[in-house]
Image (cartoon, rainbow, N blue to C red):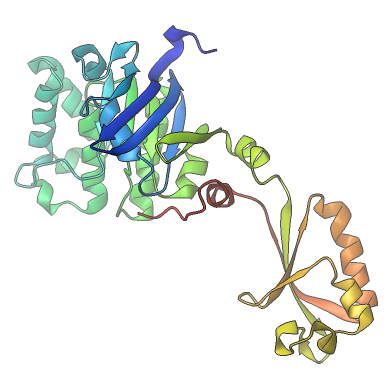
Length: 328
């Protein structure tokens, strides 16, 4: 049980109904101080409604959302929350500095503190030399950095980011995550929603998967794998006979027409994937199970032309749990 004082965010039995449609169905979520989580879910899972509830922008049908023990949407909760939306929430006809000045006032910073923070974040996002240029002249990655800076000007201890790297180049994406690393090291809890599973794997301590208005799984990646698909590896290999090309059972209606009894015996633990034109099998201990498989194939007169070992990852877990790809 997590002590109340350790919680940055708490969602308890959260329900939200729009007309006859229940979007959030008794959802529970807790985020510790300084924790870094990724929030995932297919379209229609309820993520957007949950994000709005955390921001205090939607009235719940039941349950409660608290930020550092304060009701979401209250002045104290808003003071402790930094929101970086998916859409660029900036003014293109103003300079970067003017945009930051506006957000400093919106966050309730005094004139002196606001000026100091604006100068600090301009340096932090690497745009001090572009401070007086119109935002519309900036690249997508530069706008994203300013967008992030506007959300954290008031140094909130909880930061909610909704797809912060959409449409940016790899270099800008890397810089954004370096900035998030710094904020997390300073003690901020970070909740990241993303459609990029690789980002979720790399940028979070804990992964939370939503579907049908509820949290259906959560934990570190290794824990999710163990709870769902297990740690078995998939072997993908292309097999050929000496000087006779690839062994493809689909070239004949009957497997036995293409493989001798010895060859069929050697491949009995494998299935043929026609799309990849390759044979596949699952193993738990690659070092122990693979050598005898290779020896058996060699003894049958077959040889491996190519071999790939695939480890289970978040994509496999997500498909297993939801049955759907994670798409924008």
